[in-house]
Length: 113
Length: 247
Length: 133
Image (cartoon, rainbow over all chains, first blue to last red; front, side, top):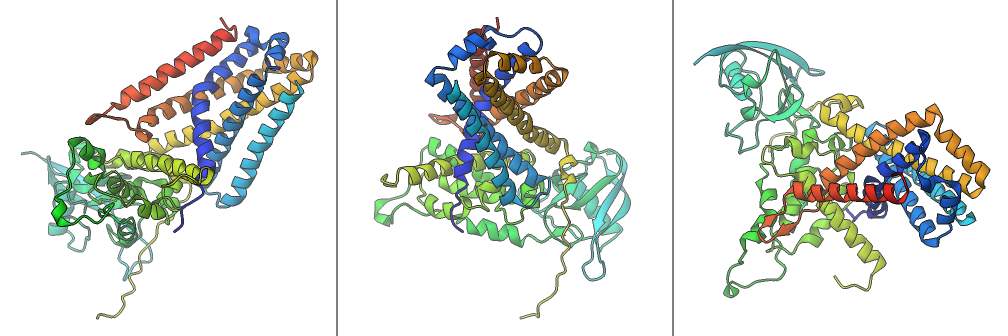
């Protein structure tokens, strides 16, 4: 029985789980306020665009998105198995690829700003 | 002392004659203060001597009488009749093959316990002349909780991952390994990692937490497993990203 | 030595309905399903970044979609699931990272309490700096 390489995927999952626990609710509240017609100042185009030009912001947001997507992908992979989907390797590949693609897209658009 | 009429619906299985298990209902008069084990003993003594089940101490320390009572893994000697209303459904412990009636095949569990090297592996050879191992109360507290396991297998019955993945080494085995890893007298963590840091070790756990919820001794195997996961992850990254670090 | 006896043990199938066998499995599944909404919301953020990069008109379109009924419903449901994820995560943290001070372990409630306090502080800080109030 050899030591597993699961830490490769579990480490980012744990980091993402912690990050989303701290941040996701308040982020949802920000856009929910906008959805209800009271957008916070920071969601105005001028301010957000200016903020997004800072490398620090780009880096930070890319990190938050990356870890959040990875964490969600990993959890969904486990859930699929729990519900009886046995093709774990295929599910894992698809979900992690989707997470990386989403992160790639975020980085791409952040770099355009 | 007052009595109560109790109906038990017990899963029966005779490997010599049955293709599959079936329920059998028993109606018995029990004492108010009895536990399910008392009711089973009463049935066996007065109604049906063929009913088979494991039990021993009748005081929740030996771990023999684990079974599913109304779908929940419990020690039959700790399941008080007064806690139940209506027909009480008694089945063998979940996620284990049924040998006969309420007796399960526990070979897999016994194998797994042995695999984690559940004994002290000293860091160095220590001759008698060097004296005894000394341990502070703080060092004892670090592993004491994990030493309280009575091997009752309720955690395996509660764990859906063990039910789905029979190869999974399981909560009690990992808690047992953790008990030794946390013991200041022990130096065998590396040897145990081969078993518990494998794919069939801690990594099958998804932290459902059911194991710790049903544990009659409050061992908290779920906590032990997460601690092993974190340590194993830190180890892995250290080993792969900083290979120059000596162990 | 006695001859091999065929014990013919019976193996019970598990299926997928185990998730309804007890409230704790339902709660576990709810916790796991939060990943759909957290992941979904993060993808909405990615889309928002795309719109932000494409200019003021695109960003306005994004804000308009946010105001749609589908978006509002999603936000409310996602917020519920995100909160459930946070609460379960912080309640489980002490189990994974026990802290021994001297002889005794720090009470679970203190460790998760500290996390909840930190969570509140971070959330308020974000709301404040975003100009939500």
